[in-house]
Image 1: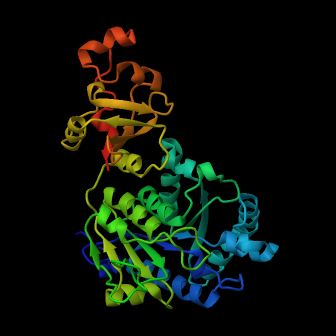
Image 2 (image 1 turned 45 degrees about the horizontal axis):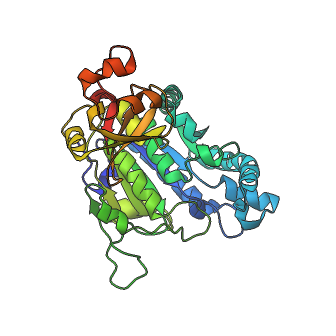
Image 3 (image 1 turned 120 degrees about the vertical axis):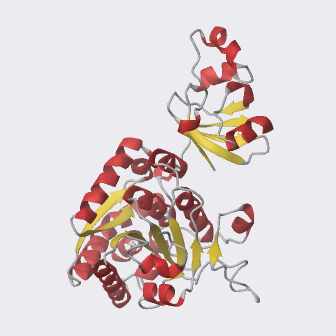
Length: 377
């Protein structure tokens, strides 16, 4: 049984495991204090989902906003990286305690997981996180995940919890993600414009869909906008995970959206295996390989990436690093784990397989990126 409409996110047969993402603007009021009454209703909805037989993972923002209020930091803690890290260190305690208290009132145990981009981009650490989440869910706990902003730098940050939610859903082997937003869903233009129309169903995030999005975060509290939500949808849809954008500003937001079918549901495009799903969700690449049109076409049809089709190489990388593959117009084609380091790739660019051994000084590997280690974008 597969998810086909928003209401299916409340069906334990179609959606046994659900990730719910809560943004800062929903969790923290203008005064810097938590919106306890609203959170209490959401905790109640999580408890009801558990009683229906669903397992729930929460991805929760709010640590920086809560900590900034306690420390009296300007710009709600986002004036500098140092401010954000200090605010997060204080706010994580408050945020974890808040979820623990409200879920405990519903008879549930909260478990806190703080992760960085590196934790989910590194294969071994990703598998460790996946195993931890799985064990917590099997034990009846509700994992509450947030980015570890107190130690994350600009180079190792998700930057928003929308993409973190999609990656957490992969690690949790979830069936769907519900992103609670401040709008009902994705509109074909700015929802404040006359005639704006909400899209109830999206089957594949295309360039046209991206053009509809706004990068603005209307609250001023969060770090993402509609663009980050579409990027999260792309990560989810390649892993066979449905993703919904629903309005979280109402009390009992899940019941309102799923019961009345108000929101935007992004359907999965395919169901990559575990390794390819992880690889397709990676955000940091070691380098870039630019390929010609014939090579790009061959990759789309299931081929491996051969040296003959490479036009140029950018960046420094070693064997086994993830690299991006783009066409000559700069459009993303794929990403995968490279079989050669950047110096070796530079020597063999444009050469046929028969010509590689004298250039490398050893018997060449079957491909620069084998199709089993490559995921199309």
